[in-house]
Image 1: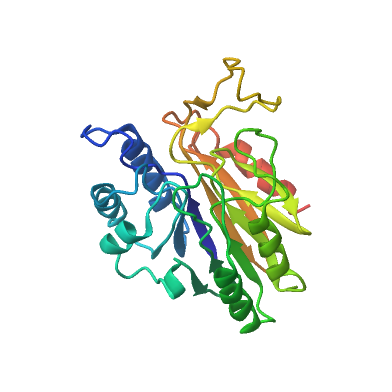
Image 2: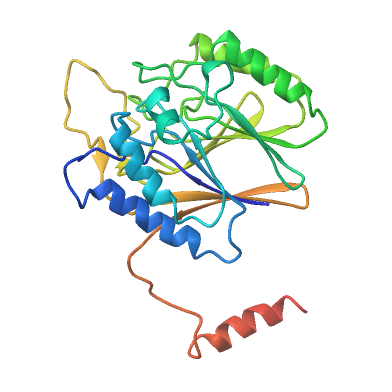
Length: 281
């Protein structure tokens, strides 16, 4: 099973610009994903789909995603608003008022969680959502399961983006996952940088953003002393590609560069042939 993940799209940052940069960046990523061979079985957009949670931006997003040949599953992030998202994407499930769902794949189960608390930058995971997750995991205790969230429940060293380890929502999520041995990893977004760490004994995979990335500055930050550090930088938009094969999860991170420096052509054919011949020895 092959799952493409995009995150932190932030459509509508320049709502009155017909050539909005974030939309252009999203289209570059979609071009790359649609051209993949093999084609992913599924595309997951893991939150911050819009900048302001307005209906107009969700409609722009819907138009952009309409050309995807694979199913697309949407998740909310802290910049989203559930009501407007649901108005434009009425097929999005809303159990107990939260945008959560299960996707049954080929030997792999995907559980998409809602960590949005509207009006708050950081994550949330209330008792209602925890009960849904507990019931959902109990329904298939033997099936390998990949959990998707918008907010990573673990610090990655970017001080102004990291959660506090004592936040109640993190403890609640950890308790809901305790003893659930079928869960193989957690995939998230929110940070605008690709990275991998671990949390609660599980791999934590953080998808790059299609919108501009966060500056990689690990030094402590003092909110009362602006130090001029880069907060948001340019660079190529990116995505994650999760491959589930032979009982093993492999995640690739890819940018979408505008220049290709080498291709498999007649000039490089001897090198490729020699490399592959070595494997037969």
